[in-house]
Length: 54
Image (cartoon, rainbow, N blue to C red):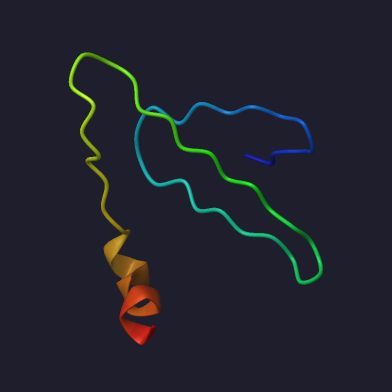
């Protein structure tokens, strides 16, 4: 899915990577909803090496 300027997207499940080309700014806002507000996220195992590299 391609997201454009001023778009709002809901991702109810799965992975949703975020990136911007060199020279562009990005703003990523995560919102929790529901009765129990607990972050339950994990990195895609195929890309875990990126986190380990830092």
